[in-house]
Amino acid sequence: MDKWLMYMEIHQLRRQGFSINRIAKKLDIARNTVYSYLERDPEEMSEWLASIQQRKRKLDTFKDLILSWLKDHPDMSSAQVYDWLKEQYKEEFQVGESTVRGYVSELREIYQIPKESSVRSYQAIPDPPMGQQVQVDFGQTKQKKNNRKEVKLYFISFVLSHSRYKYVEWLDRPFTTKDVVQSHEHAFTAFEGIPNEIVYDQDSLIVVSENAGDLILTSEFQSYREERGFLLHVCRKADPESKGKIENVVKFIKRNFANHRVFQNVDLWNEQCHYWLERTGNGKVHNTTKKRPVEVFRDEKKHLRPIIDKKIIHNTHSITRAVRKDNTVLYQSNRYSVPLGTYKKDKIVYLSVLENAQLIIRDLPVGSPIAEHTIDRGKGKLIQDRQHTRDRTKGISEYIGHLAAHFEDTDQARLFLENVHLMYPRYIRDQLQLIRKTIEGLEEKLMNQALNECIVRKLYSANDFIDVVAYLKRQHSLNEEMSASLPKQASQKTLYEIDQSLLDVKPLVRDLDDYVNILKGATP
Image (cartoon, rainbow, N blue to C red; front, side, top):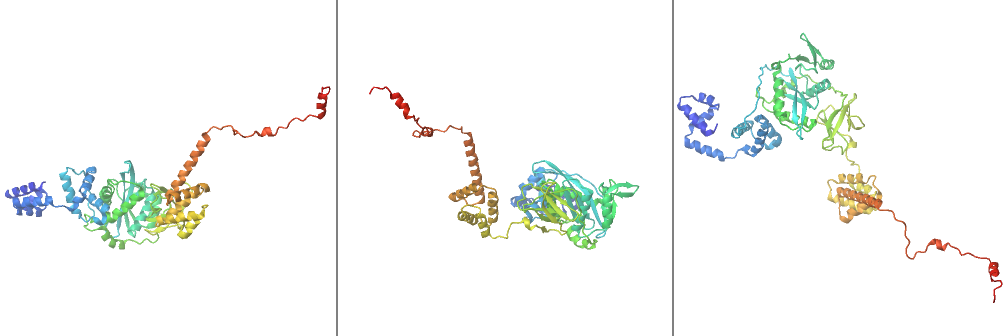
């Protein structure tokens, strides 16, 4: 409602004898607002409205961005707007959630963007003691990719019933029982302990059937439950109220984290979700407890059973992972190195885990490994093979000398490489490696021609050297094609050239008696 109209309505209701409480309830506003409006006369109200219209508000800087979100996604909540602003601007964003809520509400009213929402009711359940229970459930969403195509994602979520501390794990394929067991291990690691009881829905990955109240579990999950020693409580079918906390968590994940978020790859998605849990899922004040889950969790984790032996789940099938820019892949919250240069945009590798806790990384689902690592049971570590790093055993000067020796004129090559060093001191190893890769298998003539051309034209970079090599190759190929296309011509003699066959001719020599016989009887 417009503030001036609200002012008139409040004064009219007051004159009709309505109490402050009744006015507040009727207009759905706070009592303090009613008091504030009643204390102002029309002139003061007019001056105040004029002042707030000219006043710049903190969120005006983000107005266009918020409006674009609301127009594209009318069902977007103010809580998600608040989370996205915090994610995008981090420490720069210093605005309270209630301020965002009011600002979003005003924008919806001014620009006529009604909120689309669905209502679902849950029954309240008393909180169990600390460390007693965790609730688990599955969910799935459809996300847009950069190319506007949709991809279906699957997640499993855990929440400690007392503190509301959460853990989430995503896959871009349906979960298997082995995945479920593995995600439990990851959750226990995140919780730093194991609860006494776990509450599940009747999922086929865990429960085979319900035999008159007696649950029959899948053999793989039954073995895992016995090994970890936790109690199992499976809810009745179509009974979400009995696990209301996790139902709310699933809804929270879908609406606040996943809704309208663009998917790139499952590794980045899990990483974004991890930061969302820190920032919002576990860092935001819970509506029911009025406490931050992460703060209550500090006390609750002391009541969990310790993890005596961390269990490594061996996958018989390959797991896909995207290669990160630092030439590593993420696995179980640790980074494992791959050879330098493996990274390319949207590059995918395939991971397999062997029985001896070895992580095998391949370019293709079946093929030779590009990296092998022993799985580390810690968290947040970098596991790196020294062979995957740059060769730092040689100094730059020695590297330049070694590379210059490949050229015909070593001094000229060293001069060129030292100039490259002057141009790119911070990236000289990368520059030298590019040149080294370019001359491998290259004809010496072509290599030396390229070097001479770079020095003449004062081109001192690896990319310039590569471009010159490519140009010379094209010219060489073009010359060969032109030569092949010309018709073959017969050899021609120059004007004054003597035919060798004439020099080889010998005159006929006759016997002297022949001449005597011819001259006989001749008259003197």
